[in-house]
Length: 95
Image (cartoon, rainbow, N blue to C red; front, side, top):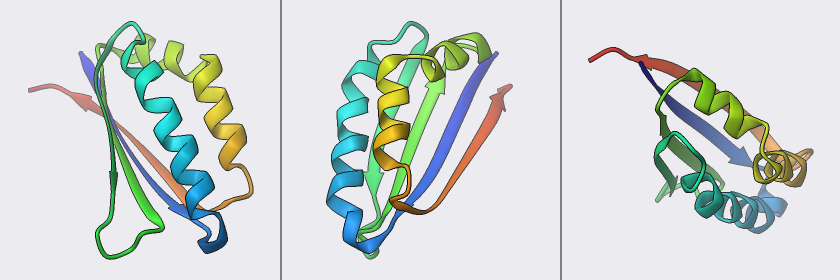
């Protein structure tokens, strides 16, 4: 069963550009990860500090492997201390 991830990321105002760059940098290598079916970065039109990452993975093992990649770890290090909040929802896709 596939797994959908919806990550809501709010950057601290002085760090918006740094956070945006880190998020953009992870998109292409993540799309190349085994088991990645979708990986989309979006930004709120009204609140430029708010980003949503929408992902779909073949299964939980593929998602876990992604979370152990160099590019994912680099993202997490790059945004550390620069966020107001991060909320990551992992959803089983059963339909």
